[in-house]
Length: 381
Image 1 (tube, one colour):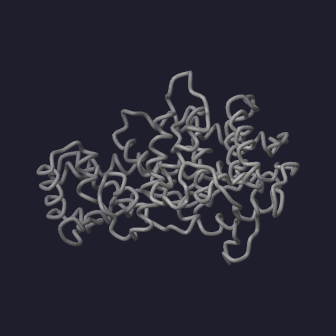
Image 2: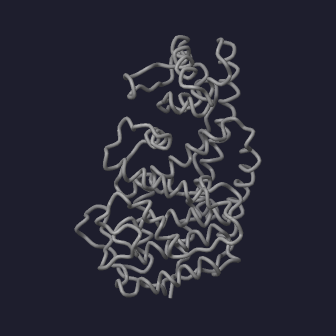
Image 3: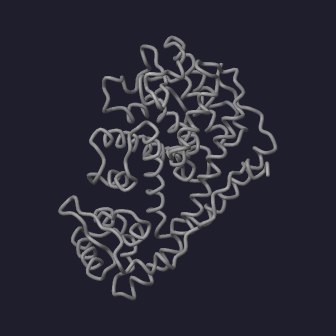
C-alpha cells in the first residue's frame, strides 16, 4: 500500500486554477523566437539543480552550476559538491529529453535505477542504481545523529517500488499533474529505496512526471529552487516528518502535503513569471543601448546575465551567441573597454560583472517589489 492521493477541497482547486493561469501566461511569453529564452531555461535548470543539492548540504552558486552545464570549471564550488552537481545535472538533462519521448514511454525499475545511477555514479560504495541491502534512516536537519524517520525494511522495498511504478503508469491519471508529481515525490522519499540520494531522486521523479504530463518544459515546473531556500527547506523537512511520523505509515492523510506542494508551485510560478517579465524588459533596453554604444546586438547575451547580477563567463557567451572563440574574446574585450563589463581574474578563472555603464539601465528597468502571495493564506483572509 502506498500513500494515497487525497481528495481536493475548494481551496486546493482554486490554487490549482491560479497556477495554471500563470503557466498559461508563461506559455505565451516564452517562445523559441525570444532570443533570451535559452538563457532563461538554462538559468531555471541551474537554480533547480542548485536548490535540490542545497537541501542535501551541497552548496553551489547558480553561476557555478551554469558553468558546469557548459563544461567550464566552477569558480567557488568544492570538488565534492561539483561531483554531486554534475551527477544531478546528468539526470536532469535526461529528464528534460524524456519530455518528448514517444507514446510507448513507460516507467520501469530500469529507468528509475538508471536515473539514480546518474545522480550517484561518483559514490560507488553507495551502490548507485541498485536497491539498498540494509536499513536507512533520515536524520534531523539540526543533528545528523538524531533519526526522525526509519524507512521500510529492505525486504519490503522491491514490492513497494513495483507498486509505485504501476501507479506511475496507471494510477490516478485523472488527477492534476501537480498532484500526481507531488504524490510520486512523497512515496519515493518515504520508501527511501537506495542507500543514498533518495531526496534528490524523489524531487527528480516529480520533475519527470511534469516532463511527461505538463505542457510546459519541466524546468518551469520544478519547485526545487523554492525548496532549497532556508526557511522553505526546514518547512519541507517538517511536512515530510508530519506525513506518517517516524515510520512508514501510508494510512496518513496526505492533504497537508498536497497543500504544501501546491503553495510551492504557486510561489515558483510567481517567481518564474516575474523573471520572464524582467528579462523581456531588460533584453529590449540592453539591446538598444548596446547598439547605440557601437556593439552588435549579440552582446546582449553577455549583458543580460550581468544585469541580473551574475558572473559572466566568456565560454557561456560564446555558446549563447553562437560565436567562434576569437569572436567571443573580441566582444568581451570591447564590452570591458566601453564600460559595460568589469573583468576579474585570469585565464580560465576569468569572469565578468556589470560595469559602470550598466548602472543607469539597472536603475531604470524596474524589478517587481510586491511581496509574493501565499495562496492559502490569502483565501483565509
